[in-house]
Length: 413
Image (cartoon, rainbow, N blue to C red; front, side, top):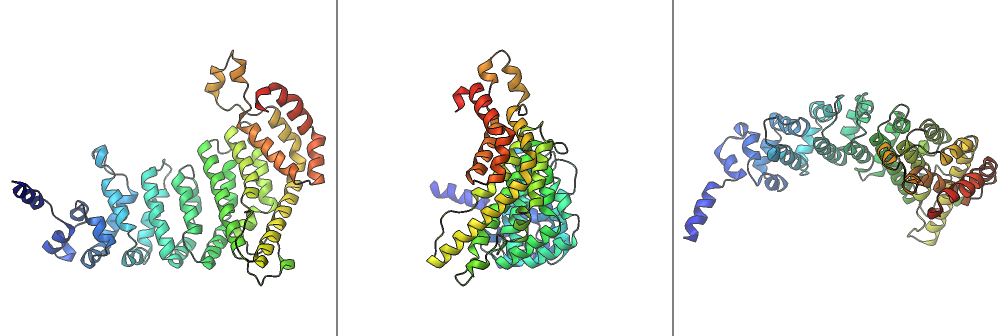
């Protein structure tokens, strides 16, 4: 009884190998493979017969199309992205023959990146598939990918207009971090910096031009991630034979980090903050980007005494250099910061409406004040006379904090 049921069940099942044995390599279709439950497993196992089929130009292009094109509307919701998901897993099985084929000509990479060449909102699922696949190609075929991107002049502008999709920020992080070779990472950062990458990202923090909070959040997160990774990479490059007296904030820094540390870039962030007085999300994210670089300097370092001394000295010079630039950029706009602290933008119109008549609910410190106070406290702690004098002369400490906020929000000391 049991064996008869088992035989009837197994008789109905078929595998990828059955499909490959029943057809010639050139006649196997992608659809016949995708419906088999073991297609991903066989791809990862690098089945030679299967790989020969998958590297066929028509099959490979069909797989790329599946992860970049919306499925037909008549497909039921349960199976809508089934073929795309399986294709993505197969493309990312890290098969050398497939990654090599995908980068041999521009047609596959063009097809991958064409998903961004639209004014419509991107599908986050398909975008994540593309990001994952592109990340693998960067890790395994970096020179081919960089050469392709260098020829595709519209890549950054075409992609950045969809920065409101989280998967797009992941794509740029993979561009910088996916390959393990430091020399390539520096080369990629140099190319991105030559395209004014950091300036293009920070432009999304200007709420007068980009009111969407998703752009504010993602652009700030991307800038912070780039600074964090670049700072870690910079400190990891220190060698015992380095001359401690010759260290500068730019020692071993990649081009993106140099731009992020520049007075001009800090000025762009502050300018966007001042222009975004009506947007809480833009102000909060600008303040986050201004404060984050100080948090990304590790306080502990594993190594011998010489390396620890180099680490500490470089970290100190980086902080001192950044504080000096903040003093130059922030001092003239501290009165505007005080005004924002006293009267921040409304967080949410719905909450404001619901809070009418309820003073306890209506009076909220809010994210803008918290982030601004945190930044001011951080900068004061460094004891720079020029900046601290500007803070006190503007009244931002005495009036805004002591007289206004402590009395208005007694429960938020």
